[in-house]
Amino acid sequence: MTSNDTPDSGLNRKEFISWFWLGWITFSVVAGAFATLIGRFLFPNVLFEKPTRFRAGDPESYSLGVDERYKDSQSVWIVKSSEGMYALSTVCTHLGCTPNWLNNEGKFKCPCHGSGFRTTGLNFEGPAPRPLERFSIAVDTTGNIVIDKSKKIRSQDQWNDPDFMLKV
Image (cartoon, rainbow, N blue to C red; front, side, top):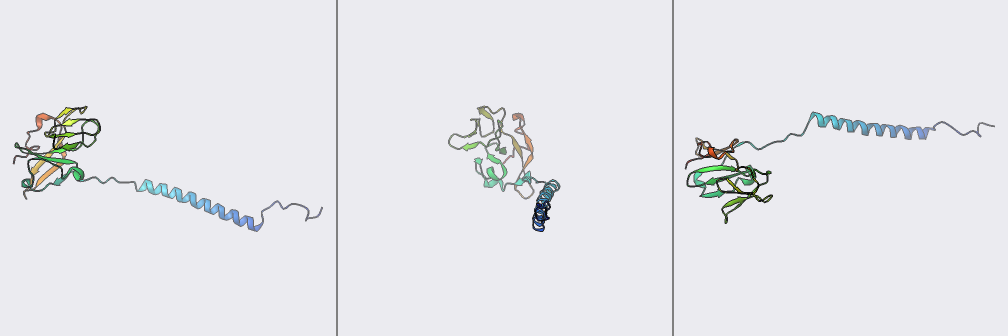
């Protein structure tokens, strides 16, 4: 048998270079994926929340009834009644849906499970276990209403507290 009759068992130069580049590409992909995971660990997502205090304008700019201008941006209804002004949360106390203000019926109605709330926030129908939360409301030195959502009450016996009922 001559040397030309035996099959070549080793890699030739062309195959070696092909496998070499395939190895480097695979290594680069794995290293890149690992670097991405490390980067996600070192720089996690941050949840930026809205400030808990905001100015709601001049008390004279509100008419009697429910004002919905901060419903979407701050999750607050501002209600002006003959007794004063107060700020209600737009979050249903049952499962957290956003009730709708039904002006013709004079109530807040939750579309998820049918809870009903009076303009005072008192729950009177449906599965909601308690009234809507009230937020702290005051007038600052410039004459603007300031609502502080970090201070809230859940109990009806605190509704006339001066921090949660603005006399106008």
